Length: 271
Image (tube, rainbow, N blue to C red):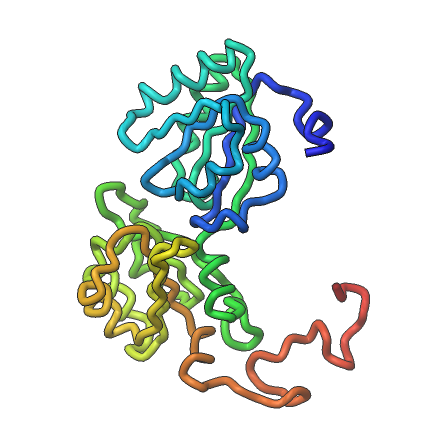
């Protein structure tokens, strides 16, 4: 915490912080530092493990928000900032994805309350790491789609799941377990029956579970394993490594060989 005063010179503000899927070790350094100095932390207690709060000051005000509406949450944040306190609004995953921060930022801006957004690790990134796969494999797939199926919250007609499935990209499906049968039916319109699907339940939590099945077993497995809450689906031909496909020796011109470290490739963009 040696440089916290330099990092956060503006003390009276709201920091909307991405907590990642659940593993406290996956917090960014900036998020970690903020939690250590915050006066007030409002956190989605149904989505964020309490272990993460062990980083907070013992005298910090901790406010769970799972049972609160936006109309109750926002006045709390605004009042605390007006009291010259540093406020952290802790969201699961990354705030840019399905976190409902758009309306929060608008209310803060209207109230002339300064705020900053701190990104977090998203579930699809943790899933790929746990599965030990790259979701953009040269010659196989070069696009990642992050989406959800239409449910209580609708999606634009142009973004219906069946339409997106036409691309046969690496598709990461959030917030859709309650509609898994409908999702499977739409995906099967364009993906092969045997396309691998990783069903990722509560990534980063102690009861984390990951099942890799074929697309035609996606719904049955979800129901049999009761994986409805906090579940991400990753549908991708890149997962065929789990079925033994797309293997090759170094130097072979096969699917999966990047040009970046190829002996004939220009070195200018190498990392």
